[in-house]
Amino acid sequence: MKTQPVKIKTIEYATHDVLHIVTEKPKDIDFVPGQATEMFLGEAGKDGEGNPFTFTCLPNDDYLEFMIKTYPSHNGLTNELLKLKKGDEVILNDVFGAIAYKGEGTFIAGGAGVTPFIAILRDLKAKNKLGNNRLIFANKTKQDIILKKEFEEMLGNNFINILSDEKTDEYANGRITEEFIKKNTPGLKGHFYLCGPPPMMDAVEGQLAHLKISDDLIVKEAF
Image (cartoon, rainbow, N blue to C red; front, side, top):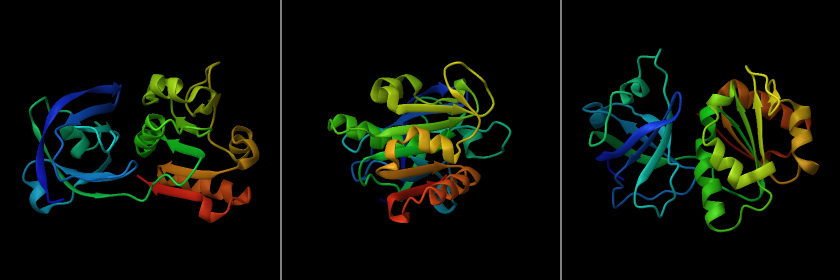
């Protein structure tokens, strides 16, 4: 796909710091659930580097959707997105991404790293193929959980949360550990899909290696 502008149809908050952006869909865009695109603003789209954001919509939807975590303390593109409104334009570039569904298993996400899994799980639900897929989702606090209600309805008891900075009766507290993975993945069967901040990814990969999970069963992408 060549670089091209698309208009914003809606822009609102999904959580206190995550923007839910819906745009027009170019006719020639093609992607599989889990893939991403580069997004630019203004003149930078012609020759600069954009920021990668994952499609959270499905390939056959007539719009594009993104869940984008903002960092008000950073002087970057996500900060600029906070100034946008309906009718404004963003520029999209090529489609890319290493995460693709390879079979039933456990999705392990940290914060905004859940975005590739949104489209994959929605696609499986649409095809009535959710099976026993489960999502282990690590966040700082309860208010950081993206699409909490949708995941609860979609996955039921297979939606497992852990919070590092908040203690509640509802969810586990702390960080993902080898024991936590073992406890929440019966028989350690199936594929393991990982996406999150690099330190979390490194830790979880080490834990999976300890649990003797074969490399060919691990599908990963850092954000």
